[in-house]
Structures are given as C-alpha cells and as structure tokens.
Length: 188
Image (cartoon, rainbow, N blue to C red; front, side):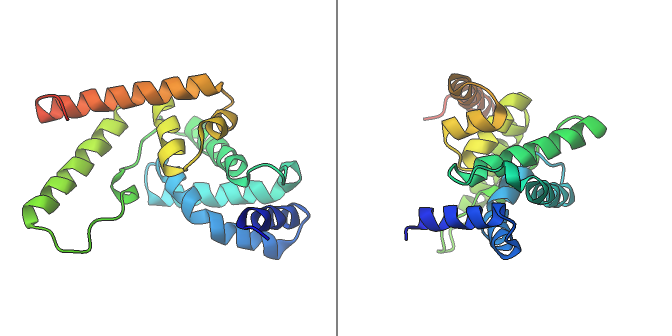
C-alpha cells in the first residue's frame, strides 16, 4: 500500500467515525496546519486556538469530507473559515511573523555577520509580507506555508486558479519591489 493510499484509508476511517484514525490525522497534519494558521493569527495563542477550532469543526463535519480527494485543502478551508469568523468578531487581519516558518539554517556555525544578515533578511521579508494586501497574504501562506498546489488553493478560497496565479504573481512582484526599496536598489 502506498503512502497516498494509506492516507486515504486513514481519512476514510476517520470520516466513518473511527476516533483513533482521526487522532492519527490530527498528529500527522497539525504541524502543517499550525504553520499555515500562524500566518493568519495575531500570536501563537490565537493560532493554537484556531487550529483546535479547525479540528473540532473537522470532526463535527467529517461526513462532508470526500475521502478520495486530498484531505489537507479541506482542512485548510475549515481553518480559514474559523479565522474569518474570528476576524469578523474582533479586528482586522494581523499577519504573524514569518521568522518561525523559515527553517534549515546551516549546522556549521557561520560568522556572526552572516547570522545577523540572515536575521535582518528574514525580518525584512516578514515586514514586506505583512504589508501585502490580505488576499495576497492568504494565497502566499497557503502556497508556501501550507504547501498547497494552485488548484488546491483555488478550491480552498473558492476562486479561479488563474486568480490564484495572478495573486501569487502580484505578491512576488510587490515583495521584490519592497525588498529592493529597503535594500536601496534592485536585487539580483
């Protein structure tokens, strides 16, 4: 049985009401879901609450899940709806810092200047992403934090795939311009 088939079997069992299978889905998908939701949340506490709410809603609405389709886009849509509900209750979108999402620094201890430059670059990227239009931030988060394909993003947001492409293209152009502006010239 392939990994994909095993995942679909797990989803089928969870949709059927198997609490152990659902618990396993929670274990497997929570880190990815948290990274995605962290982009929408004002802080870690809010992100954790949104992840928990998304899983509660997923369990309550599990019969609506189609096991033969990818599970994560369905879950991401639930999380996004939970976030929208929170935003309507309180305040405008406050984009979280991107520093936590960037992993993989070299294991060799680089010079202090390189660490400082990397930290400053991450901070500049975070500030630039925070300044993007909300619809661009959501698409960027779904693509890069959620790891979703264009069609999956379109499904989650209920927009055409070409709109997803346009949002990502414009977000990249805006980020490049903002970073060039901060650096004082064009980037290579």
